[in-house]
Length: 339
Image (cartoon, rainbow, N blue to C red):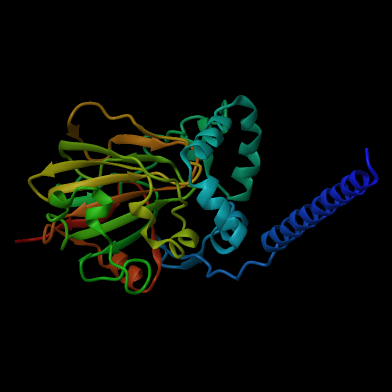
């Protein structure tokens, strides 16, 4: 090997070494920036306030996983994680499967204590997994169903928002209208509800997670729409207001002589392992179980044709004030509107 070749080889080795150092420096810098952004303090979020319908008191919700939600929807690294991973079905499915395993049962007692969950209304007190606890059935007398034929009842325990005319009212944030066509993924059917009424019942992770029919009637349509798994918590909805039209959802149309055709939709959300339908046949009976959500928070959305129902005043008034209203399965939320 000549002297010149030796010098060239030495220079090339030095160049490679220098490049490795530069690349390593760049990678370390990127990692430091990402870590810095990830731990950057998130902004203080507006507390979730709701009205206890039984007492009329305004309360502040204790949110399960609040820190995690705030980070996902208000931090740049959190948002990147949300869009690349958390909103995906497989993430919620994996976590849902974990909650089916017997070892997940150890999470039940701390969860019950932290969120003051009343298990005295449950049919059983011992559970084989966290999901077994999560989808627990209630004793038959724990919820009273309003059986009046002119009354629409709440299909779930949760916190309700109500809109008398969805075409002429802000939804969640100022200036945004609920997009019925996108939500139903059916522009023709959507025309029937464009000027109708809307009730959304948010089922929190701490709530009873079975849902029931709000009215009696004939089930005439059953549709499943694939989508993402964003959280439906107000912390998330304030940042991605259109998420109800992005998430996985399933709906049926319940045809009734009193209220016309009501659309009842179950909306999936982050860490909801599955939406399970337990009803059989094409007959809906008010108060009877329709199905349940496995682990996670979720929502029930009710759409009514224009002029068919009169939503209870307290639900409408509280919504206009930016407050949800706590409702329970079987209690009145609307009545038939007189022609």
